[in-house]
Length: 400
Image (cartoon, rainbow, N blue to C red):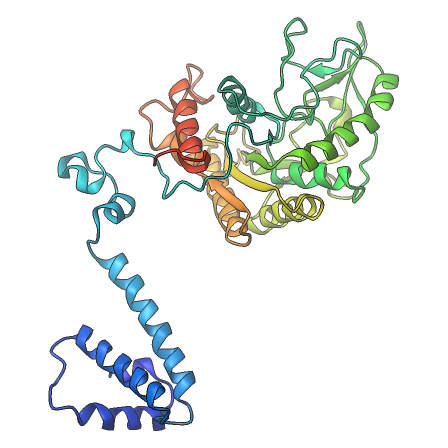
């Protein structure tokens, strides 16, 4: 039976069965059987006498089979303590062999050594991105920021900025970046691969303030300020991608709003009545997310071959679902996070220079208190746990 499973050539199976029957000692277990077959291949190779014309192709089949068996052994049973700590769900009642408490666990397999604190490092925009960016800067990393969250000269800034103490909420004033499409768009705009309509929506009349729906949360004091700032913003975006050796991108929402005219996605609903009648609610599929993230990776990498990209998923739940008639918000949030997680996994597996930061798992499963007092924002405990994971996985020399 084993020969039929391993080898797909009937004549070869017959030949090797005859050789096996010629041994006086019968293999006592499956491991001895595998070693016997391997020795037959090695002996025939060394002697130059082929068992069969299809010998090399069947030897490849044998190696493929053995790889399957190695994976089976690891998946099915106990192994080293290090492997058990990774493969078994932490159980403090069984002691350190199985990882101890989940709240002392970092979901990291190894230190990848992507950066030191001197490595040029950038990140995207949005509330959770900002939370982690604040901690990255506070810990002394070489953060590449081109646009503060408030410019005292142009009076352009984000809605929650402190004009007296501007800071970097992201590497540029991209606004809230919750959707995977937001990352594709900033790369396309930076490199002239997309044109987005210049739309400004009135926010207040006195003083006059305007918002760009594609840079959600960024406020402009006048149309002139927007027109003057735009080419500088595009150049700053290019500069960030060319200067960074590592770029961190969190996505967090799977529901969005697209223009009826061409399907271009907004990072979130702008909240202004002037957009009624021109937008359509849309839920991104796994394939949509994969396409947008790969577009981002491909464009940025084409212009910076040295960049490493870290993808993560925000543990912060959606504030509201557009599926309220079909699903409770908690269910819709779980579904969206699952879709994004599957998409990110596919993208990470497609590139050697794209990595996954287990921010979703660390910020929800590995902490006792996931949320702040509003039961939505990531708690300090969750943010610190994510930073522990980030440094254990990516900071050169850190211990896992």
